[in-house]
Image (tube, rainbow, N blue to C red; front, top):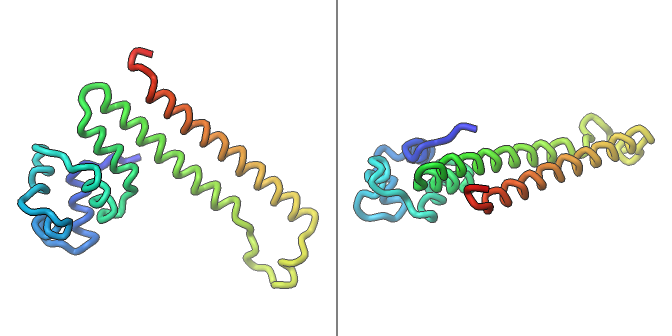
Length: 157
């Protein structure tokens, strides 16, 4: 997973929304002054709500953006911990998308009469597909649960 900096978010938001300056983006987000300049200089960080809004403007997942914001704010070893959580989120999202795609029924290239008649072979593969989906889904779920429990454990554990 590619980690973005605050500059990447600002630049992507400007590009996607055809803003020619940080000032235009600042006004669009409803700020007075120059908070985006402070973000670029790393003098201050955006609030969680501002980061979520910026992520949406940049076309990025707000959950991942909030994890990256937490890693920018953190000091020492916590930065790495937040990065690992963000990586896990991205992996799980990819797994869920993959599972959704493979679990969708495949009726492309069949006529309406054919789609109403399911052969034993089709039923077998649909059931197999569902079993694979639930097996992978449960693994992803337990991965999330394990990551959550690890992040709540004391640092020395």
